[in-house]
Length: 62
Image (cartoon, rainbow, N blue to C red; front, side, top):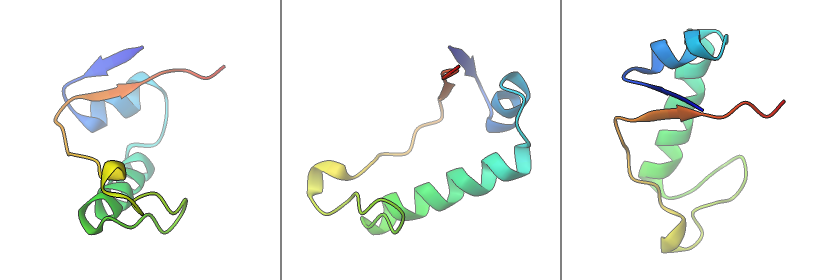
């Protein structure tokens, strides 16, 4: 597991493009704000809402 203080540091730690990661996080956070996930339809119940945090985590899946 990687823990960093910034999203850009997390991108470097997991070897992904920081601009792409930032765009994905911004999109996800937009869904969290509106309560509707246009990609996976999360947010249809109040339990699906996500609070923003300043802790960024990633786990390698392979």
